[in-house]
Length: 623
Ligand SMILES: Nc1ncnc2c1ncn2[C@@H]1O[C@H](COP(=O)(O)OP(=O)(O)OP(=O)(O)O)[C@@H](O)[C@H]1O
View (cartoon, rainbow, N blue to C red):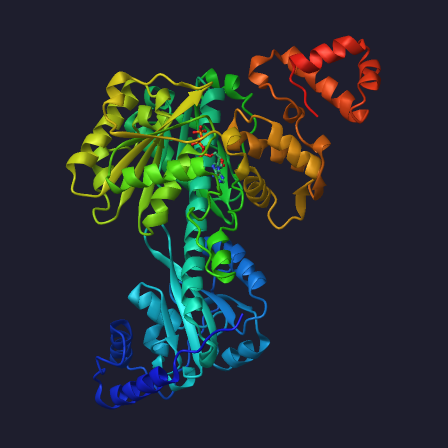
């Protein structure tokens, strides 16, 4: 890739403006941008010596932070995509301290080494003067500081393009992505590239958090379903869940004591079981599952049992407590890659992969609804991507937006959900409240959701409420009529079987998610088999099927035999009894073993050829 220079005349004007500023302390308004002028003024007021700057060093940089974890795949991908460009890529934390540096060019690396642009060193504006990293943090926006625009003399040979990495949930700047090169090699393309890559990392931060939240919800629901007589609590960074038993077995103060102890257990690495005496004198035994995301604990689900209770013994069967690890976030660099390969236009969000017109239509409709702040129902089959479509469409246009996800269980319990606080918490940031699968709402939950919608409508803050509803066999689940009147618009998410053009992308993305950094792909026959299956459980089911296949074959080419047996049929297992499923799977195994030879397969399972033909038809066995 050849990078066009910034015009020499412009550089001359900037050099002259900088010299004037250093002498007079007044930026020449016409020669430099407002952002640059403000940065020069800040550098001067901070007492930075333009002739001599030297970065401070710290030895406590966290290289395994959530930011580093979410940034690494994007940086690696950038490195792989632009191996021939003279630059170095750097990640800093929110204090402008370099966390890591990837050298694409050894020549540029040697040059930046001389100015100690290296892990551990801080490029904060108040010590280094105007520079990509420090100025992006101070101004809160992507910047390119080229040649003479740097305040410091030592940095004049360089061009640094840097963009803040914003956590989409908190809106905080978590760090900076910087690409540095020599001034004469700078191109506006780098500005677009770094901005997009920083957005990819933001999107990974969002995915990382929402995956952790999803694992927390699932673990909580699972524990609640299995421990029907016990109190079950789920605690995450921003959510508190408790089942009905928790409310009846424990007083408010006791619940608060349990919460404090659960938070304590969360901070420990070793213990997930414990016994404590509450302030009321009652003794409670805890068994928990810690939700671990990278190196951090993202939440905990605890079953709390009264030690004197006869329920303790009954609940012992719930043995699978311990740790659940949230999968790594995916590499969300599709947009960035397309910039690298020529700024090709893409209409889809950074993480949801789809090229199908029906998905694009759903996205367009939802974009309109969200723009009009209309309370919207998002309808679709289980696992079709209702939640993904909603959150990604929202965040794609609102980088400082935050989204809050509530499922039916939380809305029913109402724990920690105060409608006014929820919608009024961050008045100046666009907020999306997603109520998932509201067909499962009880009367309490419906009342809570109504309060949230009312609060969103009457409050000054920009809050939009979207609810997802599941369709099964083409039928919409039954929703309380009063709830329907809350909504102004609806959007239909297409089932996976109607957007088979997405299958290849989805398989690729899910494999990268499930087996990050592993060399694994599907054989052409396995791909065709997946394409023929109707996927009643949609993307969630596809993900499970690939997960099962990876357990059979963790690396290399996944064969059709590695896929779950049902993939070779076109009739959903939901319509079959367990015995029929077992029979169908045995027939598929026999057919696979004999390379599709029906005579041999019939002999293998001990039935006549005509019975085999009949059963193949009954079970919709294909291939
Ligand atoms: N277009 C897409 N691209 C990539 N992954 C997707 C896409 N759509 C869905 N997924 C993945 O599929 C899974 C299910 O998606 P999601 O939770 O959004 O579906 P849902 O319809 O809201 O599910 P449910 O019916 O369980 O509420 C998630 O793991 C999600 O990341």
